[in-house]
Image (cartoon, rainbow, N blue to C red; front, side, top):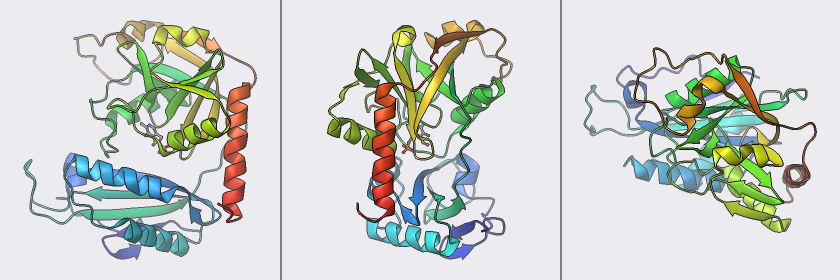
Length: 309
Ligand SMILES: Cc1ncc(COP(=O)(O)O)c(C=O)c1O
């Protein structure tokens, strides 16, 4: 099925929908977004996504163009038109179109959306994380479309053979470049607290709920980078990755000190090659806690598919 696109009231192909040059998202990254997973033709946890969208919009003073019911209707209509049962909905709201000027214009927010088939997961993919300094701004809790540091971190990780970057700020782990990070140590689950330094993942919220139902103990605290070597399990969560076990975490020895404190000197490029990889943590199988959470997640999704939840 071809992907479906939506731009300010019109459904059209994402390839033909045109965004004006003077669109604030295009010029300034002045906007926010959400990504929802669709299982068996239905959006998963839509209220939590629309709630976070409200918070992001409020944070940067863009008027929310829709009520939660209208967002749900629009999303459902896009899913229906796409004909995809297993899909990702991407939706974006920017401050609208106006002649380029830093100050806020009098403009109507611009809404765009795509629905695309969810990419196939490679079952042989072994989760590997590369530790990198978290160079993002201090408001990453807002789901803004300004993702340059995330995009660069992901690219550096991919080039080094990892499938995700594990970001470290002042010697403590925050999250992944597009996922939340979790560790299990002596039977206790660690994940960073909801503050300005992580995105409040919808999957994180859901997994915390599952952990509660399973009676697992959780500590919402940033893991010190130095404690990474002592953890028993590592996994990441996200709308697309769901609960993904991690098998290896490594660091580039030449950038290790930047994980404690970013150097003042500007690098020539941000796409530095990993020249001296050092494994910090490795495991063969999937740990018990990760396996329990994966199973509980999959169970819930299969009931959701049958319309039981
Ligand atoms: C930086 C970051 N953290 C965490 C997440 C996970 O959020 P969610 O579970 O809502 O997909 C994402 C998702 O894109 C992200 O970009």
